[in-house]
Image 1 (tube, rainbow, N blue to C red):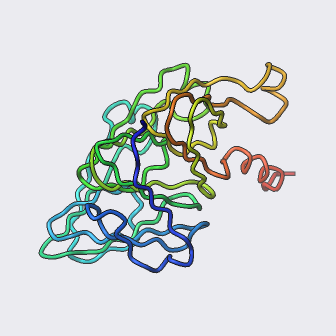
Image 2: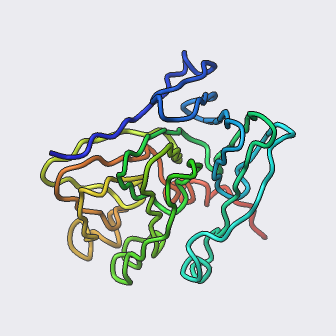
Length: 243
């Protein structure tokens, strides 16, 4: 049996409502879905919320912030953001507003001693009981995926929020499933994966399709409905150019 994750999508009609999806978790609300999701979290007195660097948009005045290193030297060498901000409610509860970097949707999962892997830019926030670490993919997987050499491993007990570029679709996998590497947002620890090409080398260079991730096992994959590469290709002809 695979582990059961408490997953909370928020419909646009309920965007302004504060949710408590798990009695062990924090109350929060999401507005602007599915295109520009904005997260608001209520932090109880003397508790701490970890937030991706530069994602804080608003906060109550009693929240104190500390910046910590995430992932160590490995993430420093990749050029990724290596810092995480911790917001602690002092002298009473406080609320923080969080705006993910990319336009898109957002999901909440309550981890109960479970593990989820995120693509390098998907992490938004988590409570203190969730350990956020970098996982080395290996040179082969990382280089050929076209994505980062590192994944973000989130494990432990508590709330986890992650975001996408575009909408998010959840897929339960039992056996095998193939996803383009640029569309992966997150996946559960029960799945193993290999990065391969779709067809032959001619297809690789001329089909517009690159490498894919072949998942196997039992678990869940979250995919995003858009990816950055095709957007860049679409915008490229409209760029200013010197005559």
